[in-house]
Length: 638
Image 1 (cartoon, rainbow, N blue to C red):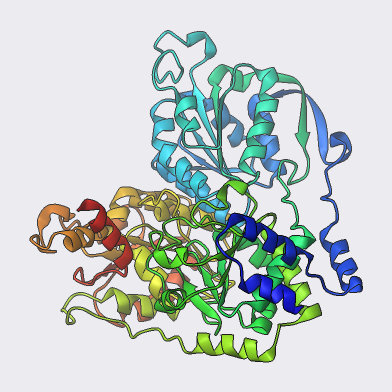
Image 2: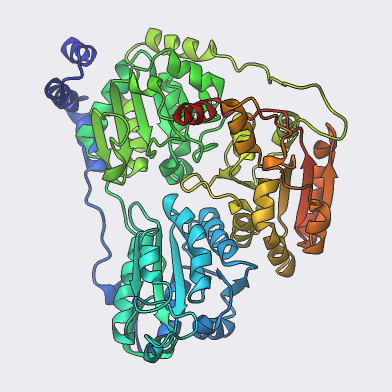
């Protein structure tokens, strides 16, 4: 590293002109000519394209019905489960699915649950999640689940039925058009990446291909199609269908070598750098985790994650700061508070969850590098000095290769970084109220769950107080995985998602963590798990309150006690509720009971296929670690 380049970095101001000049200088900071040629060759190759469709995994079929055309596309994508609820206007798809033994039609208890299942299936497998519902209320019921998947960038195809075209305008039962009923195409258009109404069989294939490209594109999300019942049965005279997976999947560009070089220079010379992983780094960390670990260890760079990226980097590694954001760790909070001079953001939009309600400590960072496949995500919250619209994996591997060739700026600098991280401590768990009989502290419950996180386990965590407790207190290490629905923050999501995830990855233990309020919203899907012998485990944090809003309001107005009935759930018997739906239910009400029970529940779920529900009676007095969020809401209310 030349002295002039180091001075360039240290003298950067907030002036856009000087920032631009500095970045240009950093982009030109090069390794040796031989090293540059090797790296440019690796990161400058053009992205391979599919080429001629008929020669690269497509075939032509004569007189293929619209329904069979959809199923042929799904089979090519290796989708083996579709989630939904039957209805007259979606009947052609139900009948077609009956004839295809390779694809199960999982009938949920509610359309929102079906969409949540498709969401969980997509997250667990990396495949397309598919939800099929009827017209009218079937579509409106599914909207929340579809929107939830879309806002988290989960690839989903939602198909809703409609009345036959000859009945449009006649006020037919469940008509969903611009003429009568609810215009479901326009409704989903506000909650999806795309929403189209099919008007004839011959144009259908173009619309299907566009929807699949949109759902599996960059950044990806949900796509909706409204298909009239008569068109669903009609033949396509000449259909072209894929024969291999990925025909409609977008391939992100690799990072330009000059941007890799500039980012590496900034990180290499920083005094207090930080790498922030978002959920957009999930695939990159799965493929290049070892290279990433070697790079940050060599350079002594600490790593924090967003909530949705929790566990992509082992939270037991010395350089892990855990989750940074709402309900994040104190180590990450303190490191940010003491100043960060270079922040590398990999695959995060830097929304409210990730930034602790857009905290001022983030805004004090002047040197931000943000990497995302979606240009619209870059610079939404912070001014970005070095924007890189590219595949996160190409940045991870590029930085690792530069690190191997060039190394850190100095051993003393690396040692200083390590010392700063090692000096950070996580405070002891704070318990506000004394232990009460018949209750377990949520902190104790999380500590017991933490002991049983296995490498073959997937966690599906709902929205509510359970979000904060798991974020703050569980230590997730790959290949253990955890999923959160932060985009829409939909309560009840985990009750469906855990079923879809287990169906998609039956070899992995699937555990949902939810609150009692969310369980009452969507816990009826335990019946779906029971009917199809899907062996999930659901842990319900039972405090008989809508806990998050109860504690949040208590922060704003102390005149109402926590015991006030306003947010009470009425003490439903959740054990009997679960058992009535075919689940095996247990009660945990004292320290140590979950520790003893969980291995047996996991074993029974795996061996019998019967869903297991653990009702954990937690102490409602314990305030979840949502301090910044509660403070922000209180501030907005005044």
